[in-house]
Image 1 (cartoon, rainbow, N blue to C red):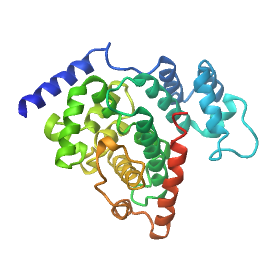
Image 2: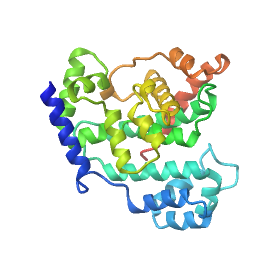
Image 3: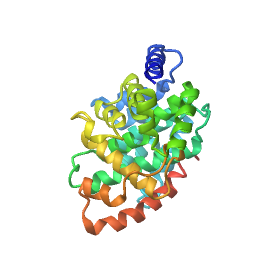
Image 4: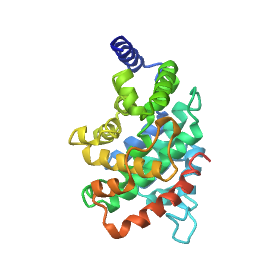
Length: 290
């Protein structure tokens, strides 16, 4: 077992060190991220970058005209769409499109449609919990969405670049009846959260998002900059899994919704409504891959 852990760590480090194999975010997405981080950039500057990509433009306009953001009047220009969605949501949506393109559908065992539906649902539920949690109310909703959307990116990496390890973990967890992340720790020396965090570090995403992704199965171990965010992603995934929005390759739910609400300090009167809302979010998440 120790030899396998050593070999996996060495192979992962080699992958991260090679600038050729590991997927990279599209240049345009990186430009949007930089523009959004620049206080001197205005809506027109950001819109001009986005408009270079017809697919990204169509996605943002569709979201801006969705029930969640619509104010009755249709949005036809990307500048108005950016203003309506807000910088945080634009950043998250552009990043989502970029990650989907970066990995494509070249995995061995993951159903990518199911994977992105699950990831989108966890992102949206994490964003909702950021509004409801009294304990972690300081977390920005858009940042919670980003961390939730990317929380399982380590599974994409393992499936695409280490298919034998991915299959070996799957067989062992199915036989033992354990959660995937626990089997990964034993077999690989790290779980898919840790692997994902390393990839996001290469992509130079915010430290809080990297830390939350790396620690989303063990949020109490997260460093200070990502602890609150990690707890929200942990809770969001547990609620999604309990509501039928799970990713089969991760195994069964380990945490009950009541425990999530207690840990996040979600007010009692709002808990039943949240469960119902997760189901509605699942329907929206299924549109993510369309």
